[in-house]
Image 1 (tube, rainbow, N blue to C red):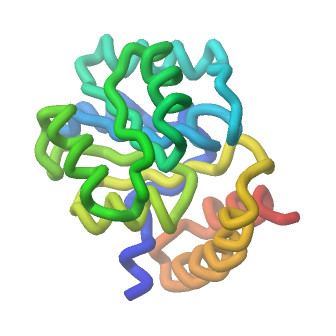
Image 2 (cartoon, rainbow, N blue to C red; image 1 turned 180 degrees about the horizontal axis):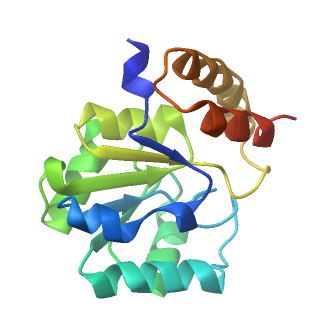
Length: 181
């Protein structure tokens, strides 16, 4: 049961994602979360490094789609800034927003990656759809109160997955150290 929360990779940030390796493995679509994945929660300003990362991914041939539980107006503004399609008010981890993203990307689950900062939305949703999942550390500590509560449960799951060898000890230590508070 706990394996449904286990990401395929657990990395420090978006910039640790090896796009070349993903391409070589046959992945062609990337579903990206917004809050605390691309930019701090409730922010509308993308930093230059994130813009460059998205541009590089697109230049390599990846198709990108934002999928966020955030409100439509904000998601559409960020999607327009990156010139990528988006699924807003997604209610992840439901399957429907991931199916919508796959249609927009025109990719199959076996060739699609999900990158996000939350186990209970991004990773659970991606795993339910048999997508390749990458959990990254949140870019900022500020987030919704409900998310903070879920982070406490997430910490327990990360410890357990690490003990079982599903997440590396170093990734678990890094993630747990960042989520203290």
